[in-house]
Image (cartoon, rainbow, N blue to C red; front, side, top):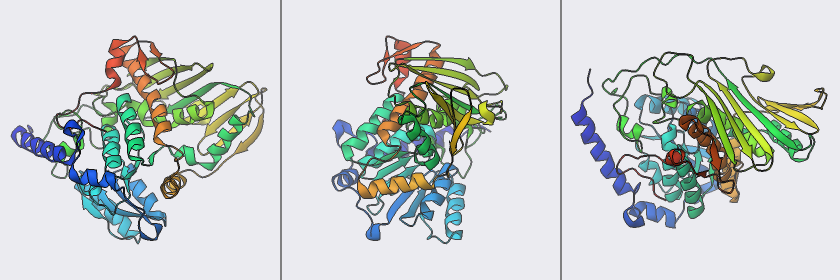
Length: 441
């Protein structure tokens, strides 16, 4: 069945007009009245110190975060937003069944932005919405918890940092390992020099993903607002194998496995190695396993060289579950006096003879990371995964993907992470936006 193009065009024009009014793009830098008011009078802490949050995207990670925030006595999930009506009902029922008040429901994030009683926006949408929603949230006076990666392009990451600093908002990326006690303990050992000087960090991710097949253009399901799902991305017809997960493997909306799971490892690696921006990035691999319309690689190796004399690598195998150290996800830090391997929520320490000499563990999940975000708001301090650190780690994923897609070695300015002397690669620093949806800080 062919999509109803006339109806789709009418809906697109309607939403573009609304978001222009709402200030996603502000001519001459002027923002909408309600957004300007919110920026001038940032959201205050709610009565009795309970932080009220609105969650954008509650189908997968967003529903898990709704559970995590509502379980914290210092937070209340006041409103949920999704373009899938089924996801709204499912999330609301979960909260009510757990004994929490039913949240307001909407398919329009402006309802959250315009509500002065809401202190924080949680962004758990597909990647192409992450930074634009973060920028809107900061400009509306909301603190923001944004899922990883914090941006779809390098430029968006820089804009998100600018928006947080300009509006003096706390922005936390959902890289939960920054708040896991066992991993914090491992990183502290590394920083204290317990394994000597670190020169190399290996990161890996293994899985056994099935084929996504070949999608067919069909009518948009009645439960989905496809135009708002696409948001800032240039419009494409609906395909029946994209929603709600396989968009990850299409460059138009996603960042592949490197941006999906690589970010978790590379963020910890960069944190432990105490590095900021690389000076050289190379990538190899391909899409080998399945005959389908996935565009991103299922086999990938990326190497990041840093001017401090340190190298990070990331190995991603989306189709083969056997990983190093009997783990599908992990990191190994290699120093001049020993090594530390991080798996799950803990670590194992080895001497230079590969003898195990220590270990530690701790809880994982979202609990400690959510608590850190809420405490950062109350005490006006940088969060564990603050947007500056989040951008630097996410940038590694973007640079790896750009090196892969351009089949080139990237020379990087180590002062800011920008690509040097490579016009084809530099062109991928930003993206084309749907007319009327360009982010503005």
